[in-house]
Image (tube, rainbow, N blue to C red; front, side, top):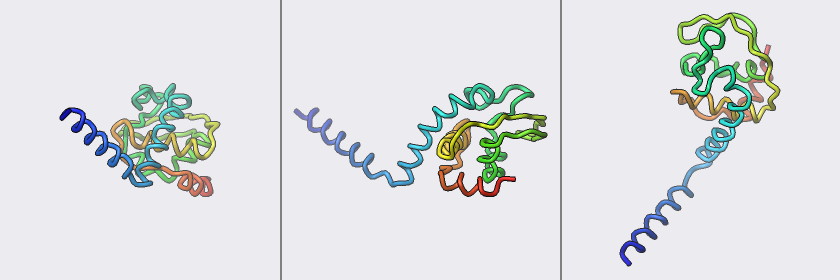
Amino acid sequence: MKLKVITGILLLLFVLIVSCQNDKGLDFNRYYSAGKLVYQNHCQNCHGENGEGLQALMPPLNDSVFLKKNIHILPCLVKNGFQGKITVSKRNFDWQMPPANLNYIEIAQALTYITNSFGNNLGTVTFEDVTAAMSKCK
């Protein structure tokens, strides 16, 4: 009987804690979990399962300094691709990334996953962030 009461109380506390998540936390969880699937389907082949990159060919995604410094152009790189020299984690890459056939929400989801995985912790990249960045792409 005591076990049932304790289990019931713990279950109730768990439900209360989960239901008290704020909207930002819920949005982050939605973007992050969907972003993992986008990453697996569109990015992982080149950048690796753990964002480690591909030797000297593809840059890693585990450099939060690079990601944070360039967060405003990441949506453009994903959508339009990139060709040229880039330095990530003190390593130089002469790199060509093809444009991704992703919509803005998928880009936001993928970037939320990338910028919060592989040792990164940069928060949610929203649809609105991607839309604003895309209006400034060169």
